[in-house]
Length: 355
Image (cartoon, rainbow, N blue to C red; front, side, top):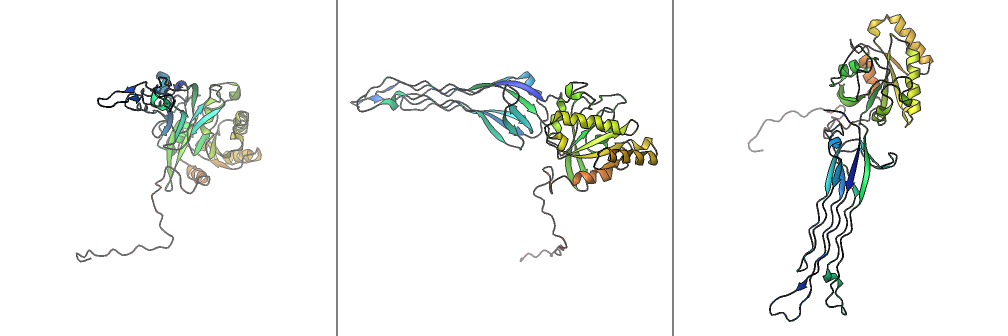
């Protein structure tokens, strides 16, 4: 499946149906009168966040969404049928933006969340509603109110508990493959990862979602390399894991990535950070300790020497990630009842047909 995190679409709600002009004609009834019913309501444009989607690729091929208009009113005071709502399913974390790409119209971050973006027009009045004591046979009626139309941008920001950042070839793909169920492409060249990847990590009875984004290089905020367009996918993360290659210049690598996060803004520069000094299997312990001390002196809060290839040090890093997660994440079973501390299980009672 191709990954797409931005799309522009046209949406239009349904117009209301027109009211009817009709007169009652029945045998043996001396006086008739107006009996034209009202028109039905037009369909709304509704966005719904659904699980199981992680791309907006469907909106590349379908870009126009128009709800049906309401049915017209009919004689015998029959109101026209209202049109069904047009429901547009989007992935969790999708933002609906105005055409200026800045004004947020809706932010769908919860499963099943529904947002009525455009309301359908109300149906027009039939001639029966115009009847008065002095206007016994009105022939006027009302056309339905037209629907609303709008061009909007959809922007996907993946929902993850932790996010991976770092320079190209820092070992992010190897790391996410080692700790989660993701199967990211691994290569010995820069920009192996071209689109964000998600993986579910299971650690000490807990589950959380880890996001890997393409590597950053100096000048990414100005469009260098792949740029910083994918940084939006880690804006919602609770903690960032900054992977640094020990075979390069760790301090310079941290300076570059931290500078790009600060240039991007959106609160990333203030987000909790765990620095992971990766590929320690390629260096001796003394060198790893020396680089860790330099990173701490350069401003890192916590440094974890690890190896994504061998698994060394990863458990301590995952323990640190759990510190930033809530007591129970959305991926865990919300119906599970934890056993009370010290509570003993009641002995199994033998079955008795008499109770």
